[in-house]
Length: 263
Image 1 (cartoon, one colour):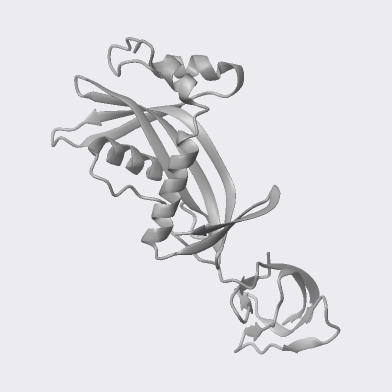
Image 2: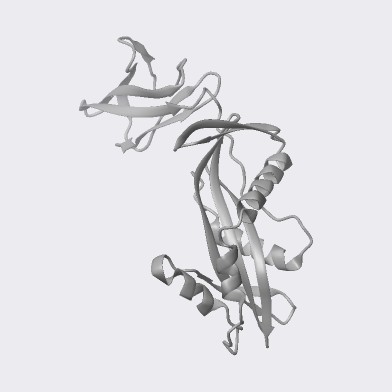
């Protein structure tokens, strides 16, 4: 939320901080009132734009009364969500550290395509890719794979699943003179009634476009396998362990169930 260069931020730790920052417009006077209190916490000077507020879990509202230099007055309501009083932990996305060159190529491509490039992103991505075949003709390489991915947030020890998806895909590369492979394009399976046919359509050789017999049916038959879910979970555990996280509580929006995961 921004008004005349005014913005609100908060950090979630043992003593949550409400931070008020200003842009080109300078306020003449500011007071902040919490929704559960009748008293202002304190007047905020222009030199010190932070206040420490003892907050409990849940949603908190702050009413900011601002008088600007032109003596106009605004009341702005801001919301902060405090999750178990825990500090947000920002993790990078999953990366493949194995020695398989084909998997390395696929995972690097997934990271390039799926990564959220926003510096404000609080989510991190976990991937699992199962390769069904790699087919090379002339200087072109096509890898047929199924990609499972999940987005998580982590506040303290609370790991929350935000979103996820499982999708078959065909990734095409061009072999360069130095032997490296340059990404060309990726084709994903379509939704709905076109799903099966779209998988069979991209199960072809990269240059001649000849069909790869039986491959599409194998992907379709494997799609409901628990292998994807189990392998994605293994990559999640590997990723958390890599970043020195030994215990999390897994929570989901659609369930009150909490799973304790010891790593």
